[in-house]
Image (cartoon, rainbow, N blue to C red):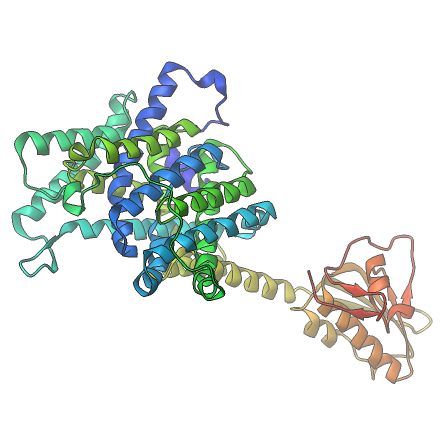
Length: 535
């Protein structure tokens, strides 16, 4: 079964390459990368402004974050072609901090957030993203697609006489919908005509030209806020360097760091399906951390990978770091010299681009495979999708992984059983099959009949595997029961690791040349001879 983004690439007629090297940087490739960056920069403007409003800070705080985070991660990040900037998932967490303590505490939090992410990269914690199951990934893209779609609906609202937001009606709504549909139509048909210009850029340019030339009265980027400004300046967060300050910013920094890394690493994997590259998780953690630390010192709100803008980049043909670098530099040029022009772009054109991203991002095949996949996987897909929409990405992924892990444990717990036979000398032999771990210890204990068994009993683990401390404790408990009844118990085909970790039952183990060789994930204290916690 093809992956979500591989299908997306097929629908957009995007060639899946195994990366590009310096020989691929022809004039045409450079043009494609630059135009892709321009398209991304145009889409970044309203997103950054909107997320700044969500966080309760000035629009330039969001724009500076998009520029700085986007530039540093484009240069040093773990996946060429991935776009980073200010995101809604982070902005939602920042709201209470800004409202309670002010924007300076936000800058300090972003700096600390970056430090935590750098440490996560240095200790290679990014590799744990491999533990995210595919159903969770599908739920992630579905939920994120819905979130992107819902975020665009705010562009169909206008300020009423009392200043409150109200939905468009009548002719303004029809014009807005018409321009959105026109943009989407251009993006759909453009690749069939020519690939010289990225389809999203063509859609924005044509619709913007029509609106400006005919003077059509529709909401424009400038209606959100002015994006005019200067270069971001170095600024130390004006907060007291006290333990009280740390207690305020540390919880927020930890949450922001976790959300940023989860969203970035998931996006990294998804973009990797199209660019044909793997790895780079630790490098991306460090790049994200450095970018956030820097943006905190330059008046930015921090950020992480943006799946919507990353998909726009991929859709427009961006495959190298040049597209991300171009997007960041174009965004800075908008702030410095081209704000009056960019503010004339109709929001309908950008909404049309994002709607096409939604269509391409949503895993439509997940709707058709629900009946063919295990019920647990179907539940996880729906659960992660709903939690992503209702709360945020980090919580959704954690919930999805936990549910998947519990389902896996429950499934494996049911697999343990024993084949019982009696030797000619009357010895009762239990041949254990299936993994022995915390979830299967109860089933393991039910296999045996200590009171009804003969005086000599053998437990053979050749077809089993002892996984954790709970399994070892179950073996110890079994040995105690037979010992209390005065019966002889022998344990066969346990690994050398088990030999060392078992205390009461250790003397019951029978060595053999075909004993398995694997390790138990527990700590063992030689001094006390006791079993410790897992690691």
